[in-house]
Image (cartoon, rainbow, N blue to C red):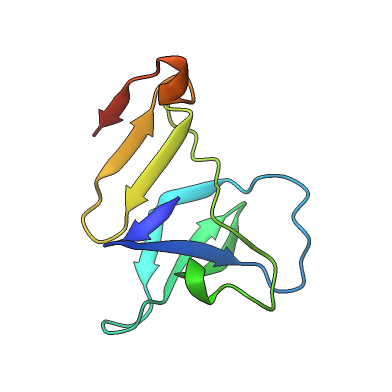
Length: 100
């Protein structure tokens, strides 16, 4: 999941049905306007709009992304760039939480 502060951002896919988890280029995340919670990023080679998950209704969306990193799950804070990864998918399975 990508966050901006405490807000989880979802990818807006409009009417497009996702058949697989999109691959997000985390380095491509850009804020669309300095005061709005609107972002753009590149996923699967195309531009996708990101906005607050709590506003995600009336369109197909995702909050889960392939990022190509070494952790199975990543949470990236778009404001500060801090990334949280869970090794071996779940802390319930004994995986360690990693920050980088």
